[in-house]
Amino acid sequence: MVMTVEVAVQEALEAALKTFDGVPAGFVPELEKPRAARFGDLSSNCALKLARHLRRPPLAIAQALVAELVLDPLLVDSCEVVRPGFINFRFARGHLYQALADCLDAGPCYGRSTEGRDRTVLVEFVSANPTGPLTVGHGRNAVLGDTIANMLEWTGYTVAREYYYNDAGRQMRVLGASVRARYEQMLFQKGLLPPGMQYATKLLDRGSGEEPRLVPASFPDDGYLGAYIAEVALRLVDKWGARLLRTPDLRPFIDEAETLIFASIRRTLKRLGIRMDTFFNERSLYDNGALEEVLGLLEESGYLYRKEGATWLRTSALDKDQDTVLVKSSGEPTYRLPDIAYHRDKVARGYDACIDIFGADHIATYPDILRALRVLNVDADRIEVIIYQFVTLTRAGQEIKMSTRRATFVTLDALIQEVGPDVTRFFFVMRSAGRHLEFDLDLAKEASDKNPVFYLQYAHARICSIVAKARGVGLVTGSRPSSLALLSHPAELALIRSLVRFPKVLLKAAQAREPHRLTVYLRSVAEAFSRFYHECRIIKEPSPIAGARMALAIATRTVLANGLSVLGISAPERMDRRDETP
Image 1 (cartoon, rainbow, N blue to C red):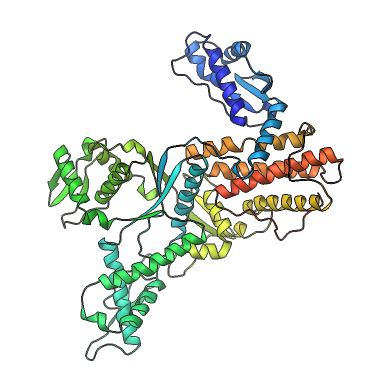
Image 2: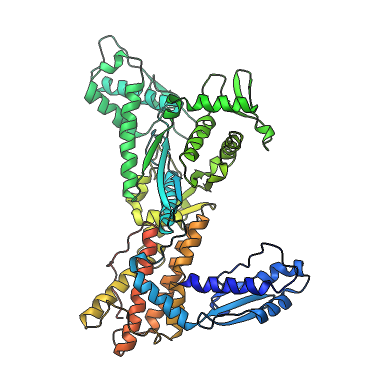
């Protein structure tokens, strides 16, 4: 495997550095892929990093280091020093052929590793309260979380996916009041209001460019206006008639809304191939006394005090400019208190790591949770927070304003309906989570090489077509040829070099929690295959070289299929485009 040669080079560098005086204790030379193929397969900048410690020019350090290196010629063909002090290594061809053979032998398992063996990870993502359908913003959260979970599973971790939600509190009361108001409206429209009961309306004007709306007089000013509210109300009318008007309790309205909305959320996630292992209800933290226990422990620690009827966490003593309210003067907890209790519960469950996927609006608030956990002597280092930036939809170069009133792709379902689940998933992870994502709907729907999803899937389908045609002329494709050393064309070697990087790329992407690294890599594989495809014939060549090239094509198919699988994207065997003659 590729990791073998990297380990060998790493050990050789470390051994050579022991002959130098002044190298800092614990210094580890780093290896990375050079930016250009002409610089080889691996590169180290350790000479540049050691220059200030050794008080010598980086170029002189690199040259002296290379003179001390002992490298296995079966793994490394050559190494050279490049200004201002990089050391570049080029793999031996025998190693490349063996790595290609490993890919062919592993097949669907190629890329899997045991890095995370015996380690457990809880990934919490989506976590939208059941107050409405999932939005485009929730979509980026969902795909990021699920893809990170996939990458961790491929690298040996035992992963659990969790959805945290709250079906109590103010948001849910507003939801229930919104449904009740629409329920009354439905009864009025159907002539089912009890005798003597009046039905009144009001004009709701929220500003922000929205047109005023005529709503039931009982509709809350900050109520939910989506069409799904009317759907819930209609079900209640069909189920109960006017009987729910006899009670002021909002619970029947909340429960019906939660049931229907969660069913919708589950359907949407299923369309994206996302499954949750557990759903954790915030309300359970109220019911089992976890909030009171957290408050008691924080008070014992001396970091809790009361002021003007509210309960405060003394975060000003914990590297924050000001203190933080945990319980309002009304007696209602802010979201931070149940979040502290929830994360305390997660760590107590024994996971080696707990990963949270949060939107950018949490960037200034989640540190409060970690501060409180440290006060509680909870191992907050087990918690990782990934912050993603928001999504902008564009068409014809123009931003589409997110508006419930205009119903322009506010829901994730609408986006999936427009571009399909594969494109939706790919586009949500093709940029770093820390970057704002511009989701180009025109590009997403284009069936050409400009569309990155189409480009990868078509490369896979093209190889499937080649395999089928090869079988049709009797070319054996089910086993590796006896010698891959026939693959010596520059395009063949470049493709091999690209393919054998897959295990490392996947491992690094999993370690960094950065799925976009995999999307960039798969594009490079497809590009390398395209060059190989146009420069190296397969079927019409003599049998030995045709067999070797066929094996290379199959290995490429394996890497594309495995990489797309990690991303949760299909690898079709046929697509609506005419294949060229291989």
